[in-house]
Length: 285
Length: 347
Image (cartoon, rainbow over all chains, first blue to last red; front, side):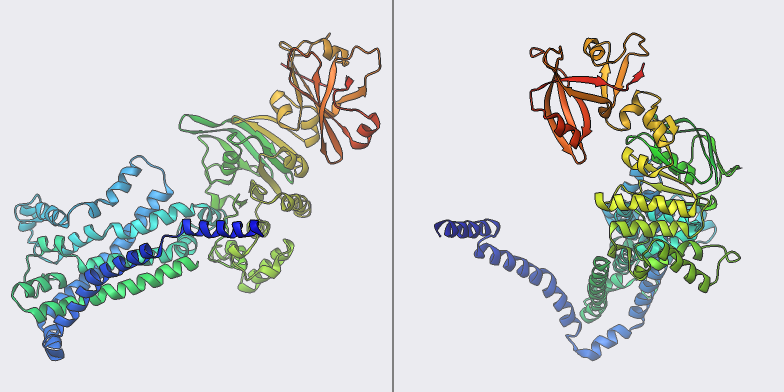
C-alpha cells in the first residue's frame, strides 16, 4: 500500500515537472492573446471602422472612383503577370537545386533568398539604376522610346524580383525530402521527362506549390517599397493599390485611404484562410 | 536476355566506385551482386539500368549496345530499395503506369490494361489491395507491388536494388523463397544487389562477389563457398577461422592434422564445420580447451582456446550438430583434440 502511494506521488511529481504552474501557463496565454489583439486584430478592425466612418455610400463611392479602380486593375495585372512567371521560375530553380549537382549550387540557393534579405527600397533602386533615365540602359531605352521606369514594366520587374523566393522556398525542402526515386521509377517504366514531371512530380508537390503561389500572390499585390521607387506615383496610371492608399492618406482622404486598405486587408484574410486550408490538405496526405 | 558489361569504370570525384568491370550474365539467370557496403554494387546495377552513366565501358543487353540509351529506352524493370511507389496513385494505377505512358501506337486499350494489371496483381497475390494507396501497405506488400509494376512493361531484364533490405527478418525469409519461385516461373534474367551473403546464396543461381569496385569472384553459390578465389571471398561468404602462419605457431595446426609440409600460402582459412573435436584421451598432448558454446538451433558453435595460460590467444570456432555435441558430454574447461578436415590456403 505504502509503495503504491509512493508510486502515485512519484507520478504526480513527474507530471508537475513536465507542466508549468498554472499562473505561468495563463500569463503566457494572456500575453500572446493580448499581443495579437493589440497589434493585429485591433488595427485590422480599425481599418474597417475607418473605411466605413462616413457610411457605406461614402465607402462605395471611394471604391468606385476611377483612380481607385485603375489602381485595383493595375494591382491585378501585376499579380497576373508576375505570379505565373515566378511559379515557373520557382519550380525550375527548385528542380535544378534538388535534382542536379553542379558547381555554385549553394551560391544559387543563397541568391534565391536575396530578395528577402535586402531592403525593398534597394530592390527598386536597382531597376532605376539599370533602366532609369540616368541608368545603364537609359540612353538606349530613350532612343528606342521604351519606357520601363515610371511605367508598368518597371513595376512588374520590381515585383518579380521581390516575389521570386516564395515558390522556390516552399518547394526546395519538400523536394529534397522526397528524393528522386519516384521520378527514376517513372523513367525506368518508360515515361518521358515531361510525362514524369506532370504525372509524378507535380502531384507530389502540388499543395506546397499552391501555398507558394498564394504567398507570392499576396506579396505581389501588397508590395509597397520597391514598387514605390519605380512607379512614379502617376494617378490612374502607375499607382498600385498600396500606393493609391498612401497617396490618399497623404491628402487626408481618410475614407479613400481606408477603403483601399480594406481591400488589401480582405486579401490578407482570404490568403490566411486559404493558407490554413492548404496546410491542412498538406498534412492530410 | 543476356547482359554483357565490358570495361566499366566509374569515379565519384577521386573515389573509384567501379574499376574496370567485365561481366557476362547469361539469359535466364538470377544473379546476386554481393559485397560489403561501398563496394560499388548498387552503382553497377544503376549503370546497367541506365540510371547512372559509366565513365567508360559498354553495356550490352542481348547483344545490342545500350551504353548510350536512356533508362526509359533500355527495356529494363527496376525495383528500388525503398520501392519508390507513386504515393498519390492507387496500387492499380501504380502497376498500370508503365502501360499508360507507352507511346500512343504501342499503348494497349483500357480493357487490356485493366486485365493485365489484375493478372499481375494476382501473380504477386495482392489483387485484393488494388484500390489502396502505398502508405496503407506493409513493407512486404509494397515490395511485391513494386515488382508487379516493374514486370508490367515486360522488361527483358529485371534489376532489384537490395530487394529485402528494408523488411522484417520473417517477411524477408518468405519473400526470398517467393522471388526464387517467381523467377523460376517467369525466367526473366534478373540481377539483385545484396550485402547479405546468406540471401545471395539462398536466392541466386549465380553470385558475383564485389569489393572495392572490382569483381572478386563469379560463380554458382556452391562454387563460391567451396572454392573461394581469395581470402576476401572466403571471409565474406560465411564464418571462417583465419590463421596467419607467419604469426601463429604451426605446431598445433599440424597436430590437428593440417599438413604444413607443402605450404600453399601464408594464410589458412578453416570453416567452423571443418573442425572436428573429440574428447581428449588421457595421455593426449592436446593443448586446446573448450571455453564456451552457443546454441544456433540445429548447430552448436563451440569456442576453443589454446591452453597456454600465460599467453592469451584468439578463439577458434567449431560447429557441430546438437545431438553429436551432447553425445560428447563435454564441459567448460575440458581439454579437447582437434581435427581439421579441410582448409583453404591463400597468399
